[in-house]
Structure formats: structure tokens, C-alpha cells
Amino acid sequence: MATRAESIPSIPLHAPLYATDNAYEGDCFGFSILVELPADAVRSVLAPTPFSFVTNHAWIEYYTYPALTGFSPYEDRFGDQYAVFGVVVPAGYEGVLGGYYAHCYKNKDFSGAMGREMAGFPVKAADIYVQRTGRAVTGMAVCPTARCEASVVIGAEPAEDPSFAVRNPTLLLQVIPDVEVPNSVLVEQVISRDVAETSDLHAVRAEPAVHFLAAPSEVDDLAWLRDGNPVHADFFSGRFRGALGHVLSTTQVSPRLLKRINAAGW
Image 1 (tube, rainbow, N blue to C red):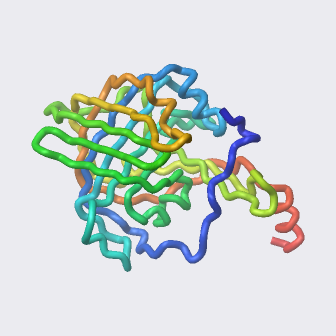
Image 2: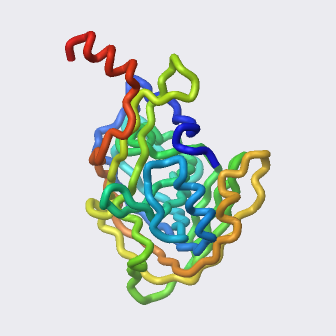
């Protein structure tokens, strides 16, 4: 696993930014499965980040939006519903506990909207399907570097996250690369974002099943999850509302960028 110095930054941000009214919201439902993993597997995922190890667990999340507003001028009327598959790792940063968003796959081109890719979500495109039939909810995510199938059977009792597996707020690592130097960072920031505080979502317990299958390509993003054992699950639904993030720290700044700022008198 790459060390902090060897980590490869994400793609640069773009202008103009994706058009949005910054008030996106909509009906939402999905499920979360907490899996227990070998501690070394979790530590290897956190190694290239500034986040600290908390527990040998990770959250698997599937969710979809039957109706979503705020992404004007686009209209999402055709094809599969907008859906997301994510992997969230409980982690810590300078006394803040939350969930590091390690993987984020989406089936719609909304990744540039406020709070998404530009805030540090590691977005990749994938075929994602989330469907509810009675008490059964299934999810599938497929792309060249990942394949995961999961399902839950909805229960009746209210659900609460296990205290040892915190996942809110979401901890994001926003990285802007230096385009003049290979594998160099221009600016890196740690961001905290909490849609649990802005949304009206309600969760009930569920019985889980999850399968991580071999990826079609030589690169398998989810290989570290193969030995995961489900220990908790919930089904959630309600009204989702977007949220802005809060910068906890600027962890890296290129000396060349600082030199240019000083030269410009900013």
C-alpha cells in the first residue's frame, strides 16, 4: 500500500463548476451494512491518508433517490434512478471521529454538484441498481474496477449505529494536484460534512447479505473487503438534503504555490 508521500492525487477541479442551486434534496431510501474485517486491511486503506485507525470495520452503503431536485438545468426523467454505492471507514482526525469516504460510485453525472467531487468524494462511474420489493432491498454496483452485490431484509425495530463504528460526520480528503510536477500535491485539505444533521432520515434494523466479486479488470478497488463479515445492517428512508462541508485542516500546500502567493502579494 502506498505511503502518504507516494499517494496519487485526484483529478483537478474544473471551471465553470457544475450548475446547481446549492439546495438539492429529494426522497431517498437505501441500506447500510457494517462488515468486520482484518485490522491490517483497514489500516492499509487508511495508510495513504491523514486519518487514524479506529476499528476493524467498514460500512457498505447503497442508496437511491426516486425524486431529486436542485440539479438544474438537467432533468433526470429517463433511465435508472440516480443511485450511489459507497464504502465508509470509521476513522479519526485530530480528535474528530467520523467516516472516511474511501470509495464512491455513482450512476449519474451529478458528481460535480456542491458537496460531491469538489469536496473530496472519490467519485467513479458505475452501473448501480437499487430496488425494493416488499421487505427485500437489493443493490448492485459494477464497473471495471469494482463489483459488489448486497441485500437486506427490512425489520421493524429502530436502528442505531454501533458506538464503535462511527460514520458521521463524513471525513473527506480534498486533493488538488500540481499539474507541473508528477505525483505532487498543490493543496490538500481535510473536510468534515454531515448530511445526517440536515436530512430527515429514519433507520430500522435489517438482515444483511453481501458479496464482493472479482472485478473485470486487473485493478480491484474492493479486494480488501473480500473477507468482510456482516455484523450489523439497517434500512433507511426519508428526505435527503445536501450540506456544505467544513474545512478541518489544510494538511499540504506546495512551497511553489506559497511562493507564487507571496509574489502576488495576496
